[in-house]
Image (tube, rainbow, N blue to C red; front, side):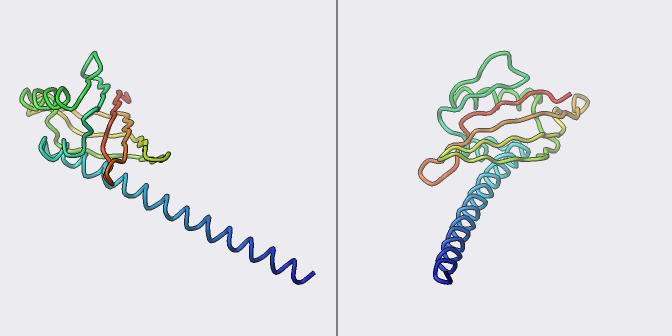
Length: 154
């Protein structure tokens, strides 16, 4: 009887350790994804297209409240991004992620959060609250943003 209890406890301990290791791996991966999103958003907030587009996948798609159609591909995204900056529409005063959640399935991560910030130049600057979903894929050991969906929260 002692032998059976000892074996059972050993098995439970092994399963517990394995689950803890898997949980730690998942938490580390979630942290890596969130750090990627924060670095990417910092480049956005700094109005820095060179750094921003280092995080963007070539096959990106976007849905933005300021655009009536889907933007497809890194080149079109870059043109839209730089045009908006030039016009002052998307010049960022500050940008903040609120309530971020990271979900990982295989080599795909989904990050959802509310964001708030100030957009625009001078007299046209306004505070905006938005809801955002970013989809990232891991390729060659790096997370890249492959889809962005932003909608108004107000």
